[in-house]
Image (cartoon, rainbow, N blue to C red; front, side, top):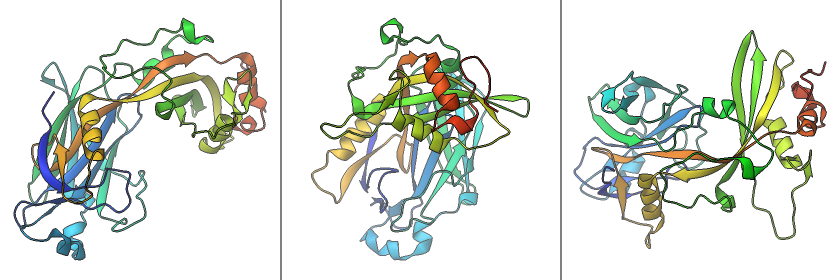
Amino acid sequence: MEKLRFVVAVSIWLFLISCEKEFNVITEKQEAYAVYCLLNLKDSAQYVRINRVFLSADDPAQYLQDPDSVNIRAEDFKVTLQPFLEGAAENIILLNPTSDYPKDNGLFSTSHYQTFKTGISLKQDRTYRLTIRNVVTGYEMTAESDLLGRRTIENTFKETRYYDINQYDPEPIDYDGDLSPGQWDKIIQRFLYYEYVDNKVLMKYVDWRREWMKDGESVSDTAEYQLSEEFLRYIAENIKYDTTVKRKAIGVDKMMLINDEELTIYIDFTEDQSSGHYIPDLSNFDQGTGILASRYYYTYFAMKLRKTTIDTLAYGRFTGHLRFADSQGNWPP
């Protein structure tokens, strides 16, 4: 693993805090950026976020008043991912500016960072190199990361599913952390389905993370306890109603979100700070600051849907309008 290096920064955790300021105290007017990217083999899209980093020999707070010191323009950057298989370079992936990732409310929330996206699927067993280049100034920064896990989204649509969790054999994975499904704060349920539209078959999914329940509360389950009413309602809210589309349910992956070693170190270090002021920040980029790391949705149970569950999706009060096929393979009118 490439060793994470230390730089002095004022930073508030990536993606999560609306009012974020980052400062590297080095020399005045030196160009630098903070870049964050968490690759996930089981995500259908990958995102990169770029911030301006303040560099100064004096009090960096004064530069917050200058918009040119805060804001960056997406058109000034070329962002690429390149996979390597056993050292051999493969085709470069170009990431494009996007507004898909919502910007939080707060100071400089409208334009102080830019987000880039690719919908090209990642490949297992690769090392990925992320390159950020300012095409105006020529500034360039890079980092590399291996991918955690080996199963892609395509794999999950093809694997054998079971009613009983004890029948399922999870994938072997090189991971030192706890993989017991009792860690409810890390559990995600992924509902997988096909969409049939314009003679195309599309693989789709909806991810649901159940909120913490208060003492004494219980989940309202239907269809032999495979899908709760809360989950069905969430599916209905997140699948677009379209009379020209037909759908077929595939199953539910019960997954656990896990982080690679570098990201685990990064999170533990940045969260364990006694002071909210000048703190050491970790980075694995060759210059600037930030993190390129890997997360993974580890499937501990690929659940097969019962006929009653499939019929609930086809005719139930929450999802009956979404044109899911019933257990006999028929679509509602």
